Length: 326
Ligand code: TYM
Image 1 (cartoon, rainbow, N blue to C red):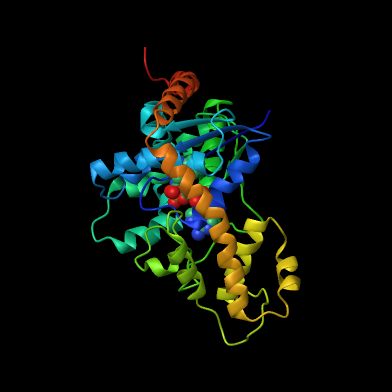
Image 2 (cartoon, rainbow, N blue to C red):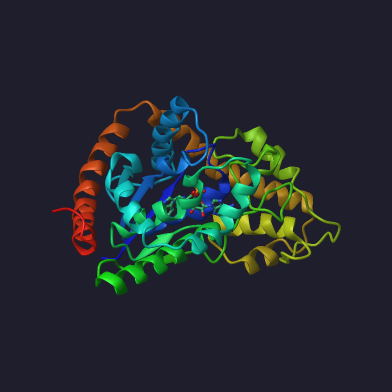
């Protein structure tokens, strides 16, 4: 059976972009792949975090995974920092990655430009991500478009390592949705919907209440063409709403265009809001039920056991290849 793995950072509130770009994919793929899903809490500390809030968020992200339909029987769910081998392998991979490669990462350029004093961890972040992936010999990595470059770097690092030390890592492929890989901000549809966005009006958080979701979607930026037509260049706002609708309905964009060809923006937005609410409200109810159950710790204990065994084996192989240890 082919293997997939992905992770999400427990920072900020997850957005509809995270749901469509990553979680929803995992939910669909869990039926046919051996699936690994984790909370990337170590990635979160690349920027300053409140320790208490980070720990709470890591746990609540697991509740959110489950509430979104991730089945713990079909996925190995774990916390990145529960498994020491992620950091261990990351060091070896760091010594096999070039400064120039990391300097070209667009997310690093973007994030570092927003902080006056950023950490070395923000720079080496993609290598930790490469370690997350390469420890498990996965075939595919379901992600949104913004993570594609990091998965490509992972491939480069793995290929270089294999060439230098002999076959060690499986070369993974990014798995990116045809529709919905890049959900845009509702206020500024030329930039991605991001949980770290300052203007919360542009992002739908998975835990936003009904009124808020409706208000944000009804207030989404559109254009003066007045036609429901997919054109990301000239009509980015309406195209983004079409993408959201098509992704959540699992239908092609052309079908959305055909269905709403005679509608005005107001009535289309209302349909989009209804659909988002229909999907998110049951998730929120389930999330609240799960949040305080023991189930989360049991799932994480199991995830820690299973992944530590796999990761230890791979790390020992890496040590042996590189010449570390006795
Ligand atoms: P993170 O936490 O920023 O985002 C989690 C997932 O959500 C996707 N995503 C989006 N998809 C569509 N539209 C958007 N607007 C949008 N915003 C975010 C992201 O592409 C991602 O799939 N470095 C990763 C976490 C990570 C990881 C890994 C992922 C750590 N190790 C190993 C895969 C494999 C991150 O910060 O994702």
